[in-house]
Length: 261
Image (tube, rainbow, N blue to C red; front, side, top):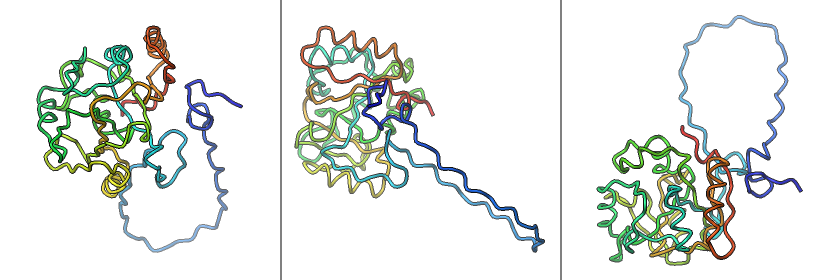
């Protein structure tokens, strides 16, 4: 069986298992004929839909929430403390990251945003549903937006890691925000993540703005994969596991998730 040097299962990596391009259709030459001139009309083109590695072309597949990949981005500087603690903490739990990439105003807004049952957004660990979610794209592009701190603007995309979990491993008590969880018009759904994501996909087919919020803390055991931008970063992360008990998640190099568009 062929192996992927990036750690993905066979067929799931666009780099190690490139899809074969369809053969070009033969063009049959015909005799040119004169036709009456007609007006030229500009046709708008739509941006190509983004696909996860290995996903088939065409419409995005309907992925059951239990097996859906969810993504949490953190600076490599903060990853070691996460590994040593054995879990990802919410901000409200008193966790203070070594490097805070969120702007103070963004922290304040999330601390006051009520998910609908008296709990606030900063009591949860946030995950995105797309590896190209809007906030991660902002960080990759330089973090110039007001959500981010000066520390974030000093980093590059290669200074981050993407932690991947699947829906079933985050427990049943999840909250889904159909957009930026700190924005005033965002709607929250408590306890039915699958239905909430299906509803959100009607207005956001690529699910680039949706957040899945896991309460309190997420154990490291729920993380199945850690993706980094390059081989030096993978070596650095693997060294971090020297003092970590238990089986570590796979650490893979997957540049497409770190590309600056």
